[in-house]
Image (cartoon, rainbow, N blue to C red; front, side):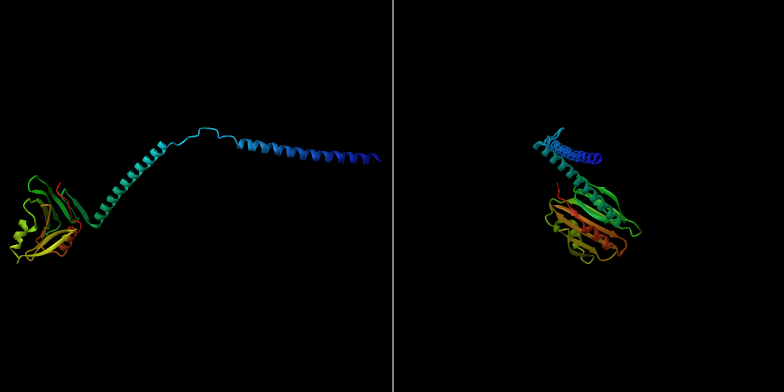
Amino acid sequence: MPIIVKLKRKLAGRLKFSLKSGKLWLVIIIFIAGLLFFYYLGQPAKGLVKTVSPADIKESATEAGSLWDKAREAFVKRTIKIEEKERKREGYSTYSGKYISFQYPNSYELKTKESSSSAILEKAVLLGAGISLRKLAVTVTQMTNADTLDDVSGVAVRRLKPKLYQEKPLDASGTKGILFEKKESGFEKTAFFLADQIAVTIALTSVNRDSDLDADFDVILKELTLFSLD
């Protein structure tokens, strides 16, 4: 057999052996890598592992509740401010006293706000702009001997003048009262309320009978709130 043919066969045998050896080593490497992977996968996590106790959960819940209360309080305050700005933008302000609260047009300006230890518990006087000399007077009086509105002197005096005053029943925010409207000589509307022997008088007067005075008086009665005596 020629030498060249022998060399070719010998080289081919060595090549096949090398290929088989290479595949074997590849299988061995993959097997070792798999073992290492599963080994490290089963190891416990390294580092600090924090456990959560019931006390920690309760503390977190308390903090969350406190934050919620603060957020709700801030929301309520912001809502009140927004509503107050909205009322001013619409042309209204709010009088809030110890015994009474009501809204009034911004065309009126609060001049006096008084309270004393005498029978008059609270008094507010608001004056309107312009030459009509509008005046809004709100008086809160303690009347220990008054059981009904018939016992209020302002009501009794106006009932003696039926030709001058027209009497009507009144209901302001669920509180029953009496309204007297002057028939002549300028404008006058006076409302009387009585609750827990506290008489509230709301009088709007003007030298002129302007058309918007009725609307002003309705605004005042619409949001009227009477507070009980402490």
